[in-house]
Length: 440
Image 1 (cartoon, rainbow, N blue to C red):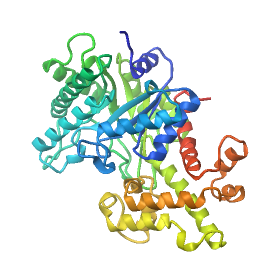
Image 2 (image 1 turned 180 degrees about the vertical axis):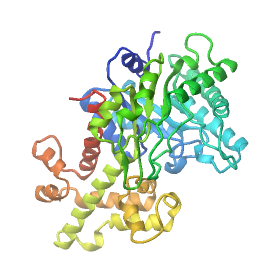
Image 3 (image 1 turned 180 degrees about the horizontal axis):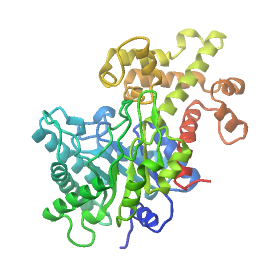
Image 4 (image 1 turned 60 degrees about the vertical axis):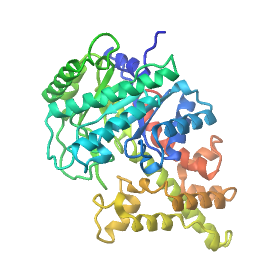
């Protein structure tokens, strides 16, 4: 049975001079996942949804989901929206020891192999193999060490794929993304200027990785794991911190993107493209950075939508249209939860007030996303949605969610609270779809 993975076809288009890309939605947020699926339904395109290793892993991650659970959830939501499963591309992001960096290398890599195995066994078809980070007391890693560890991860993935194929004889092998200069997941928070990956570093990295893959028997013949590497992660000069965004400067990345354009079968994958201007995203795709990863910008948009709903709820309480004792107190509950357990934002935000409070609420890095799955926060969201259902007036909607007000007035959106938040995330996703050439 002949088959070309959608991402392999995308790479081929890029090499033929067709400037098409794809948005990689890296999030476990229900609002974001629903928005991504809705965007794909509306545009008639595939959707690429990726789970990051700290969100979803063999231990459950901070979402409580293992890879098979995440797959079942996403495909279940796709079915609800009427999106065929074959148009859903599932990926594993930063699959490697990132969640266990403080452990010694031997233990961390054993856990990373198990993680990668489980993702492939569950049928994820886009695998980002990431062994770029030092472990335990390590300070730095040589490219050769990163390549050796990447080989271990790839072997684990291939074993997982073979297990998956036993249950599905028509299953097709996963495609891979590799790299040694991998931006920090979720934004760096650093203010300093970024150093764009040098073209010679990209060439040397690929040569080193190919040599290691070949020595391990992973580069032999058509369809080998090496032949299924579709992208390399680099630093093209894009990043964001708590209140700053490093915009893409094409001139600074020209040598890198020209070099990448000459490499057969491989495009560049851009991480931390959150908050980039649409014109910058479009130029990145034109320059061969064909996979645009985004996550915090989408949960940031969802958080904005939830805050807007909370403010409408407060207005209803103040006017006596809703009993104050029945209010969700969503904003307060979220911040109380973050204060009680600061483990997911300490080290990213200052502890000094009032900056700390403002960053917990409004930082670009959006560490609040780590708390949306907490039972008390989920309960507050559910209460708020129930309180607002059927009570949102157009005039309040105009005040707090003006874009969604316009969509409701145009008859393309119902003033349902969940739908309003999803639509707000869709507004952000539309910028990526347009930049990738997938929407007018």
